[in-house]
Every structure is written in C-alpha cells, then in structure tokens.
Image (cartoon, rainbow, N blue to C red):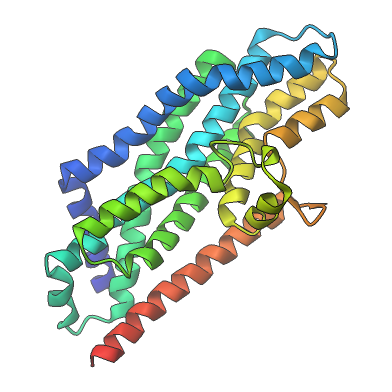
Length: 300
C-alpha cells in the first residue's frame, strides 16, 4: 500500500506540475461551455419553443431556459469528463516516451501496482478538473434558469465521478499501446472530435438512423449522457408539466434529447444504466492491469 500511495502521489504531482497539461485540461471544459452556450443555445431553444407552441400553452421563459441550460450542461459534461480523463492520463505515455517507465520496470514494484497507480492518480486529477467544470455549469444554470434540487445536484456529481472513472479506464487501455508524443496528439484529436457524436452529446441520437442508435445502445457513453440528461433536465420537465404541457408532448421532448435510452424497444432503467457503467469500468480496469502483467512476463 505504501508503494501504491507513493506512485499515486508522484503521478498527481507530475500532472499538476506540467502547466501545459493541467491548464489544457482545466480550460477546455470552460471554453466548451462558452461555445455551447453561444452556438447551440439558440438551436436547442428553437426546438423546445416550436414543440411547445404547437400546444398553445404559454410557458415561463425560465422553464425554457432551464431546459436549454440543462441540455447544454449535460452535453458538456458527457464529453469533458471523458476527454479530460484522456488528457490527464497522457502522463502514462509521456513516461514511456522519456524512459521513466523503463526505469520503473526494472524495480521490484509489481506491474499491477504501477498500473493501478496511473489509474487512480488519473481518476483523482480528472475528477478535480471535472468538479470545477461542474460547478461552473451549475453557476451558469443558476443564472439562466434554476429548477435543480439538492438530489439532482448530488446525482450530477455521482454521474461525473462514474464518467471520469469510465474515461480513465478507457484511456488506460488505449494509452497502453501508445509510446510517443505524436501518438498522444493523434489519439487526443480523435477522441475530442468523435466521442461527442457517438455518445449523443453533440447531436441527439434520436435524430440519427435506427441502425446507428442500435449500435450506440451498447456503448457506455450513451448511458452516461442519458443519466446527465435526467439529472440536469428532470426537474425542468416536471416544471413544464406543471405549466400545463400534455405528457405526450413532454415524452416526445424527452425522446428528442435522449433523456432515456431504448435497448431493443425497451427503456433502460436508471439503475441498469449505473450498473452497466460500473461493470464496464471494472472490466476495463481488469483488462488494463492484465495487459501490464502480461507485458512484464513477456519481457521476463
């Protein structure tokens, strides 16, 4: 345990000491928040307003603002929790590039401990950044339309933690096969540009083909986005119902923003989403640790 604690402290210290890596991970979610609010806010608003106008019921502006803000909030966190984890986990690749990993491998330290050290330190660092991003989003939502409850906020932070754990586990498996700075840049660009589409953050999956939706229903990121949707928009949808909007319209709006995930014509429950994400994280961690152990044995 002492060795593991030392490895975690060492990796965290190096992450925060690298100003470029730290500030890139910190600023990226905040920049995305401004970009989302500037360019996507009106698109989301028009979609909600057009659907509500069909009913002919006057709805308070702050309810619409809360729905728009909640969709922006959930979209941003769904992406940034994973991309920040990838960014924080690049330390593992840097250690390979500069020869530090080779030095560690000749010590009696177990490869599984080294792997867990990278994983836990990355999770802690990425969680720190993601919590700051979450607080910034909460402040933004407080100013545009506030319907969140204390329970909502609690579950939002739970969602953030489990998405960071998933992002770190996924990046650990992928980064295991990387060994140069060029590969880091390439993977970082691919993840940043593609992940938001396949998890439904940039564009709701309901607007895509049925075949694509079927494929994404197997992906853990889809469930992470849906959980965040439920906890950032649920209370606003309740307020919309109190304003007199029929449940049929509210259900169609929920379907349009991927509020729920449908798996082969069955709506997946919230508890099942959490369970699926937790199992995925555990499996990825096991794969990552085994990769390090087999690599050590192969060298031996």
